[in-house]
Picture 1 (cartoon, rainbow, N blue to C red):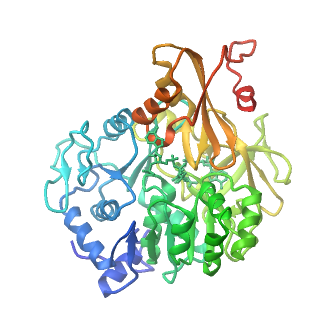
Picture 2: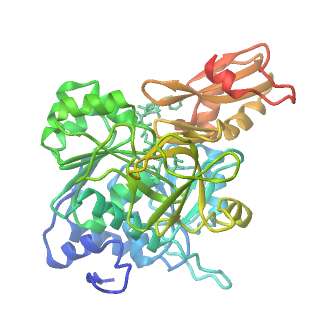
Picture 3: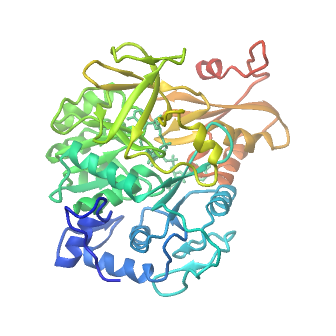
Length: 476
Ligand code: MCA
Ligand code: AMP
């Protein structure tokens, strides 16, 4: 498969890999460096196309998404072959990956994965192939990204090419993102932030990319980029390390997202790096919808304005829409070209996620100013936890812990935490070994979903109807 380069002005969307393909065709272009390994755009396309030739359009394949060049090759290969890619967390436990592989219908895994419990065919650059399959309805999505909800196991979100293209083009505009940039981050490649913005974004724009491996302050400082992405936990660790933070003074733009950036971290970063960070907001289901702009005001505590092609509105508790007044809190609804294709195989969940007139209900509470700036003020459900920028459903963890002998009752909440934003805490009634329970969640779901703390309690606080009062647990 040779590089086929769509040109600006062709029917939208041009290839998601537009910028990378242009470099590969011409030769040269910026280095792609991932956790210490590097290659040129042409070398990357060459490797990816060897793998892509073994895949089939519309037939989903999975990858164990680690922060490695092999994962980036798999991402590019799947996009080249138009095979929907299902990224699976590198630190996933057995039950979570079994669920995702079965639910997504992935036919193969790209690259050697080292998971002894997984027996799907393996396709590499040099061996294996996805076989034609009679009667299979091809999936129309570039990615299927799994995300937690309030209850049940994670759901697969279909992300078609036009939604991804619209999101990245909106960000290009908001952040004045150009091929002259060098993007630096160390985010996981199994979520939208690191994968869509942090890899496909760089390749659509055609800028250089350094993935640092673990996103430590020292690694960010050593990378010499112009554009940096991080979750608030990463930024707060950088803000607490003045030597690393001041090394970012030469960067053009520092971008935070995936969870609220504390105002104190925003101010400290501005002081140490000489520039105020840009904050943007999004969801796996809608991709990025709001951002402050490189050429506009960067207001602490604000996620700015809708991207091109996106509209927002607020709905009050009484069901009526709220006029932007900078004060009244409402449930945030969004619609527009970045919104994805719904949940794979879950028509009911897809239908209930949108209003009758087609707006996606984010589950976040927000305030909108008369100037159009948005502030995210919380979530409508305490059963969705954001820890280190990872979204975790309380119900997933409760189900694992409740099944253990000795556990009579359990409730999981996100407790405010200076480093992680929220720290996952399980309140357990019963006779349990706390360390064992933590390990069990890590081995069953994923390491990043493990509770950081187990608190033994005599009883869970309940209201008159018998419902656990999670707000009281959160404050206890
Ligand atoms: C600790 N470890 C364990 C256990 N405890 N391993 C097994 N069992 C245990 N019980 C190991 C871990 O594997 C890891 O090993 C090491 O201890 C440290 O882990 P941890 O403490 O969890 O890491 P951390 O330093 O607290 O992580 C902070 C982080 C991380 C790096 C900021 O939270 C992170 O990468 N967050 C990014 C989340 C993100 O990208 N979200 C985007 C989704 P080792 O050292 O070997 O690894 S949101 C999204 O996409 C939307 C669209 C949006 O808006 O962006
Ligand atoms: P995910 O489902 O993992 O894509 O996470 C999406 C959720 O992350 C949103 O619904 C918000 O709750 C949260 N989020 C993302 N960006 C921000 C931000 N800048 N400020 C506050 N919350 C955010």
